[in-house]
Image (cartoon, rainbow, N blue to C red; front, side, top):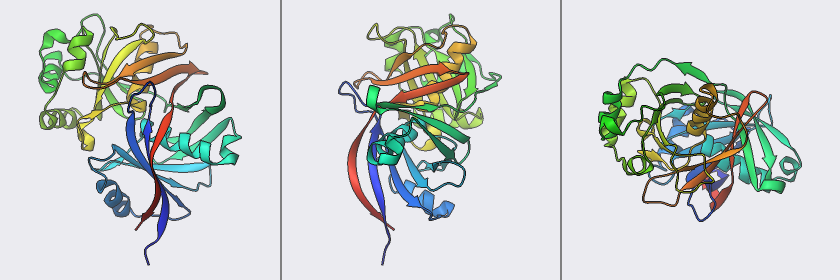
Length: 293
């Protein structure tokens, strides 16, 4: 007889009618799966969600989270963590009573979840410590990979490569209109990120659709089996480190809007506390049930 596990599809970073970013999670408890079992389940969700999160018990933290896309294991997934932990905290009275929850991640060590469900209807996650790399690509190469022209890349801000969960190439774009209308070819972009040894590309514009937002961002993730992430924790965490390192931001709470021209933009909240970047948001359950293997 097949065994059943608690399963939910949850959209992260929802709000103001935006659709967020879809993830799914399954609670395994003490059960241990092989890499093939993890990947088979995640691959079955290709085109339905961006990442799958497997929740297990941990000997060194409150929970352990393991992340998979339809293509491979993922070092860290910010929106998957928001989706999973927001719903688990709301569901579990013991977790709901805690201000801080420790999570063991499969690749990035122990991170902290800050429970602000009562006061903000949101949670915040401590981003992995940033690693900064040399930029080994030229603007014209980046423009070609993005399917645009080099003149749309802003000369006011530098490009950077920062890993705050995923190794992220950060590319400034001159205007919001240019930024929201970029549409790369997924195969061309995937070849570029693989050859450049990066995980994702974040493009940003300081011009926004609403004055309350600090910047507008988009994140491309062809390495993981899909072109664009509609709302991203790891990418925007790298962006937050970028802002701090270049003295563009002092760490006070801000929000960025994320998405392309064909969608209601999602909201990702950022703040810096005690030398940590925190990214946060809310989430919405779309499917709840049992998953049988």
